[in-house]
Length: 447
Image (tube, rainbow, N blue to C red):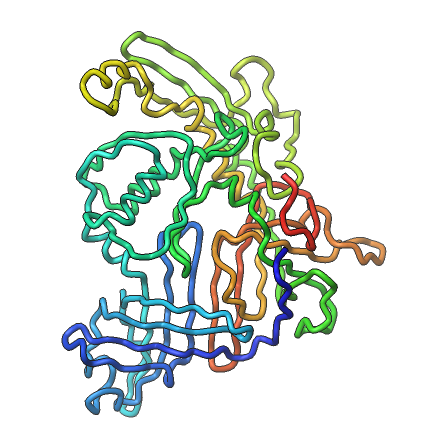
């Protein structure tokens, strides 16, 4: 069970360090902590790396009696040491690099500059290409691309969820991040009932390191915090009900089920047409989300229930998107010559169990979106599970929480906002299903 921390008011946090190192002379370092107006830090499961923007004023006497831009000089790729903590002493300590320098204003007495900061790997990705063959599990490929000295060569912590399937491929001079996102769609988790029912991973970075996680494992993880939103005047959250860790200052919800768009993308029913050119084998299959629902790890009670009036009866008739695939037999078998001959009829990639299953899961995940703002909490990260409760709207006075929209969510996007006046954390939360299950005091949601 998550440790309860009563959130303090969203007062300014402490920026301990914002030091920029010159590219030209690395003995030159300038701190912009005192002139910082605003720092915004971002994480997302849809974003390969962490990012930050820093806005600061420069009075012209930062280094060698010149501005930061001229004294270092500041041109891009400079190393920046960033360290800040919230009012509960949760700290983020990073080494980032300048991706873009944007002067916002300039006069005779001072200037205002915005820096876009990224991780080292974000820049290194533009200078590295995959030019070898990869054999084995997809999760092993991700580890190799990230840690091998010939590729990204990161020293950061890796949290890679093991995949159940293998996939052999040749790099073909692809960029590392492109390849890892491409592989994510082909990965199947090692979870009960996953084979043939679900697929799809997210590759992303947080301040804790790089993560490679399946959709179903994200939705079945232990919740990190419980957050309550209500209209009580207790804005500081000093009198939270037992079991809640923080009070949301702002709350909004959005049903993301645009029926036409979901059907176009094949979120609930698809058709796969398979063809083997060597023996003219032809097969049509129609994976359906409702048929596989019992094997999925859902955030809520059930996937959206659509109108049965639109269901088509008959074998292979009910679908809204079609994908075509040549059966991949005998492609890049691993082993020596004799072993490769033995595997000449094996499939390298099984589209029947993976292709449309990943398409459906990616599109199901964003069925519900909730956005909340809380007092700055730097312990939260993209990919974390949190439990959110809000009052039930009723014609009669009710103190119940919403049974439809409350419950477990995944942090899809996160922004920590620090200014001279306040500190907030804004969260975009998503899940694949409707209905509240479990409660805010339990550590892990029932599966």
